[in-house]
Amino acid sequence: MLEIKNFTKSYNEKKKAVDDLSLSIDPGDIYGFIGANGSGKTTTIKAVVGIHDFDSGRITVCGHSIKKEPIICKKMMAYIPDNPDLYEHLTGYQYINFISDLFDIPTDERTAKIEKYGDLFEMTGNLGNIIASYSHGMKQRTAIISALVHSPKLLVLDEPFVGLDPKATFTLKQIMQECVSDGGAIFFSTHILDVAEKLCNKIAIIKGGKLIASGPTETVKGNQSLESFFMEVQDI
Ligand SMILES: Nc1ncnc2c1ncn2[C@@H]1O[C@H](COP(=O)(O)OP(=O)(O)OP(=O)(O)O)[C@@H](O)[C@H]1O
Image (cartoon, rainbow, N blue to C red; front, side, top):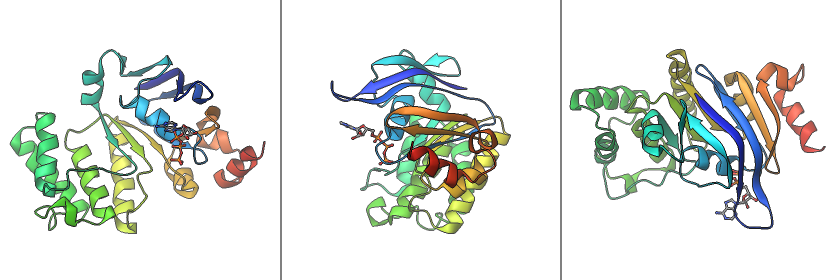
């Protein structure tokens, strides 16, 4: 569903932020992307969702190039950034309706989705208030609801659990599992290795802009914990 081939991106001439990274994310995958601060996770994610241009390589969503056919790709996916920057002067409802308009979601469909995800994320009572009055976690939940209204096939999430309370974290994990059991795929970055180990069927580890391990979680980490494996490869 998502193919990243020989992806390379530099912000300046001195150093490549990501160097020759290749990954394949298939339907049914919850693919965790882990790495130390500054290792290149957000750079990769922003290229995948069409925010960053890149030097070389190829990124495709269901066979469509994010560089050449960005609209087709964006219709099939949703991106939730690590720090959602929503329109603060809108109410939650207005914001989600604005996103629904962009994706041409019929009224009855969006109403059903907003009701479903609003209830699941305990936001229904707050969606009438302006976003400026929300806590970080409420903004994050609003961003998640708005990302789900068009039933994306591919979910790309940057540090999705940061700022979410335990109930919202549980709900998001359930939704991620629901998405892949319906034939979707998820690519997300996280520093929470316990969650990654339990939730992800596949794991990729990036270090200094280079992919150093990828594949089925059990194969990548062997018979040790993901945390132990990660600490081991950081020292090499
Ligand atoms: N806009 C930018 N301009 C210049 N350099 C950048 C920019 N964004 C990222 N970088 C550099 O690219 C490298 C990779 O950064 P990136 O944000 O992708 O890492 P990350 O793995 O997402 O880190 P974190 O876990 O801290 O979020 C770092 O060396 C960073 O300093």
